[in-house]
Structure formats: C-alpha cells, structure tokens
Image (cartoon, rainbow, N blue to C red; front, side, top):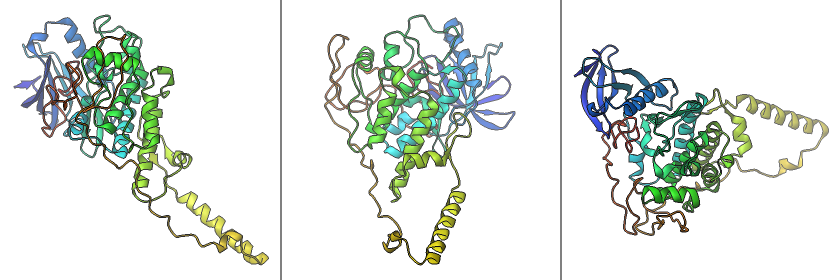
Length: 414
C-alpha cells in the first residue's frame, strides 16, 4: 500500500488499541520512516480523530534532538486511513531495556539528562507531555534518547481534547496533583521523570497493583528507598523530582538536565579513577548553549595556561629572594590513587516482598521495592511479577512496541 502517493508501507511493527505502526519508505526522499495509521473503526470517532490530529500538531511543532520528529500528516479522501509520518528510531524503548535489569547510576543519569532536555523544549513551547514513562522513551543509535507519543499532550491555556474529568496517562507515573484532579503542569512531567529515574536505578517501579492502588500510593506514600549502592546525590535528585508538593520539585526541566548531566559526568570521572569533581568546578566547565540542549564541556586550555604561568612566576620569585616555599618540600604524588567507583553495584531483583497497597485511600500503605511490574497490573503479589501484559520482546526497532503509544508503545493513550 502507498499512502498519499508517497509512503510505501514495508511491514507492520506494532499494533495498539486505536492505531498501528508500520515501517515504511518515503519514496520522494528515499528514506525510511515510521507511519502510524488510525484503525478504520476510529476514523469516524471525533474524539479519537481529534487526539490523532493533536499528536501530529503538537509533536510536529517541536524540533529537538531528544524528541522523535513528526514529518507529515494526512487524511486521504480516497478511503485510506488517516496517517502520521514520524522519524524511524532504530532502537529499543527504555521499557525493553529495563526488562533485562536496572541501569547503573551513570547510565540512568544520562537517560534523565537527555529526556529532561527534550521536555524542556516541549515546555518552552507550552506543551505538557502528560505520559512520560519508559515505554515512551526510545533509545536511538549512539544512546540518544527520543521522547515519543504526544497523543495526550496538552497545550497550556488551550481547551482539552480529552473528556472532562478523565485521568489521562499511565497511573504508575501520575503525579499526586493529577490523582486529586488538578490539571497537569510541567512539574507533573518532572514527577513522572523522577519515577522513571527510580525505575532505572531500582530495576522496578516504586508501586504496583491496580490503577487505583498505584494512584493512591503516589498521592499518599513516599517512594521506597533506593538500593544502598545508589550514590546519595543521585538519590537526592530522584527525591526532589518526586516531591509530593509540585512547588518543591526542580524549577524547570532545564535544571534537571543540568543536575543529571553533572551527576553523570561525576560518575564517569569516578569510574575512571580520578577524583570526583566538585560541583562548583563542574558547573564552571559546563555551558548550556541553548535551552534544552545537552551541556557541553568547555576547553580548559586557558585555565591550564594561567595555572602554569602562575606557578612559574612563583618559582622565579622564590629563587630571587632566596628561599623555597614550604609546600615545595612536600612531595606530592603525580596522580591521586584510584577510588572505587561509587554506585557501580547492580541491585538484584527481589523475588518477593512487594508493597501491599490497599484498594482505598483511607488505609495506610507501606510501600517497598518490588520486582518490575506493568502499569495497571490487576493485583499485588509476593510471588515474582509475571511478564508485562502486552509487552513484546525487542524487535531491533524503537517503534511498534506495546500497544499504541507514539511509535506503537504503551497503554493505549497514544
């Protein structure tokens, strides 16, 4: 099938609740693309079609390395279904990667830094994603994170395209203010990103159970402690992101991107055997070239040259006045001893001990870290969590996993 006289469908890579995703070829530009088709049964439903158009309009207005691009949209008059043409991300989703176990602190902070940079671009455009979760974060070649699925995104100040009072998104990542019916804000996206960070580090989401159980837990309960191997400053960022009060979360996604990048670089330096750089020194060495972009390291050549010249001048002055400085007598090792990398231990998955979350808000909940389980799982059990319903194994592409989000992933909200 050729859509719009241009997009030749090659093979289906995903099928969801209201759409399916195909690997296709743009015959005009000779490039691979992903094409999202609305199921024929939904073409006559105004609400679903409005969401599909909104996804094309919202994501199509964004251009950022950490957001999956939307190239085209069409509603053919010849009986073909409406379609959305997107960037083809040739890599797995974060959800699929985490199915094999948790990430280390450095990798986790790299994912969070990139995702936060993409969210900053969306927030600056007045767009709230409302469904940040591992299934909607694709990992492209080279480790580039791509945010996808803006199907339920909301433009600040505009009328909603979803039914009034309906809680949109995935319950396992809802911010407390969303649970009580408040409108989602950029701070709500940051809360969800904090839950993603927790999941990367712990290997499991903080709460599991029914949608109501998870919503109540996010509203009332603190997140279970992260594994002891997680560095304290990394745990502090997760705690700030998941503060119950939106006002206590970081002020912007740009701030989160910078903090996560500093933590990532600090973990990398520690793993290389060098001293852990002071935050002040790292802040001086990082430059944000534009809002939402990843920090880039400044060349230290000028600072090094100034240090060398200062040292030489001190030695010359000491020789002229006839004495050596006291610090010269102490022999300083040429390089500091290597320190073991913090946070390199991999937390083992637990086979039991899941949090038993009550089905009503009135009963107190005592959460605990538990094995990875799907959002919307029907019950909490002490037995090992089964595989995610609808979770398909990796196919080598980031599109078409799950059932319906962005590139064919997620829970039907896309």
